[in-house]
Amino acid sequence: MRHSLKLLVATIGVAAVVPLTGAPAEAAQANPTGSTAPASTVDWKPCPDAPGVDCGTVTVPIDWSKPGGDTIQISLARRKATDPAARIGSVLMDPGGPGGPGAISVKQGWTLSPAITRQFDTVGFDPRGVGDSHPVLCGLAEETAPFPVVPHSPEEFQQLLDHNKALGESCRAHTGPLFEHVDTVSVVHDMDAIRAALGEQKLTYYGVSYGTLMGQQYAETFPTHVRALVLDSNMDHSQSTTWGFLRSESTSAQENFDQFVAWCDRTEGCALHGQDVRAIFADLYDRASKGTLTDPASGTKIAPMDLLGAATSAFYGPSWARLASELAALRAGAPTATPLRAAAPTADAVPDAFQSVFCQDWRLPVHNYWELNAYRIGLELAVAPDMKRSPLGWSAATSCLGWPAKVNNPQHRLSVHGAPPLLMLNSRYDPATPYEWGQAASQQSGAALLTYDGWGHGSYFKHSQCVVDATDNYLITGKTPARGTHCAAVEPPANQARTAVPQVPGLPESATPRWGS
Image (cartoon, rainbow, N blue to C red):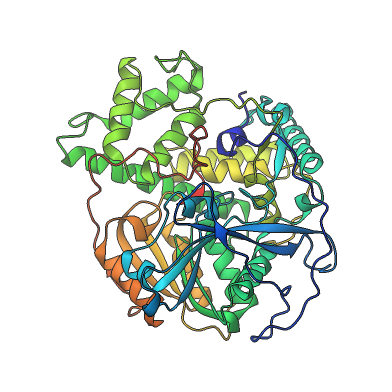
């Protein structure tokens, strides 16, 4: 047993419960495109914590089926187009997660290329339940309670269910009515309210990772409100079975490990060059499984899922050189450059939207221990012999077992009719959103798929001018690249940071990856 993996993906720092009661939602009225989003505009004011950035909010109902009920405010941050005379409009941006705060990220400098920022206002938003948009809060005691991440008996399986239920109930108690309404369909309606409040007839959007699910379902729900959607590193919400979800995620984890090994074999600068990388990793995993692998700097035991999470997050960049050095240090008993486990929080309640959102968007049943154990064995023997499993896929799926909230937005095939051309991007070797997910989402939606033949998560940010130019041209003109277009791989820089997993600024780094840029 160990502390909850959700502690490692939670964003830590909010101690007080945000009031949920609010003024009744403004009366809905038809905007010029026929939407029934609440009538409002954004009262932009300079952000006190980000020079050159404007902050604002849009008011939305907690429950979109009851537009006259209680409301919350969605936090926005805007950087104005650098060439007002050439301005086309606003591009709405989301960094994924679930739990990535787009407004906070834009304030921190997250942006697109100069060609885009010249002609577009870049507007980030914190989705409902995230960042400054009424964050989902969960009890610290429940977050830090030990539980079996990978159960090895029926008793441990029940302990996992009990833990998830207790954690979910604590989130409900600390968060209030919004807890039941943080699914992506609700976020899609918020996005249309933002579009209307920005004064945009049509939505221009860049979403990465879990943000692609928002964009995909926006195109389904409001196809005539779309101007241009760039969906980078795509979710596949048609994954209808638990095994299919786990298999596809773990296949990607193993493929990325294989690519790391190949790089180490051909690169003299790899700290493990000329050595049996697979055997070294297997030995470290075995030591972690036996409880004998520790961080020499702190003496903290490194659990198997911590090791897998550290490897997977290194694949996001990718930051292979850093990973090789860390594995070599662990093998030698020397301190690693980066902690492989996050620091513990000290607040009574912590923001943690990941589980609440994911478990309302996905139904991935596991009926008993024996079924879950069969999945574990199948993954380890037939799918991912080195990586064993995707730590992201496994923790996401198992975190919903026993979860007390309803699945509001279960999986379905993507169906888009009446929207203009969409552009999807995907790396061939993406550790979080497998290439097969991008292929499936493209086929289902009719979107053009631009393949980056390299590695990492978030293709737009992989130093490929080919990807950036094609994406920028689409955002400006609406013209997609030719179907079947591929962009050549770009060797990652040797000094790439270990993880590109999104973090709330100033808070402890998570060792467990998630679907974000």
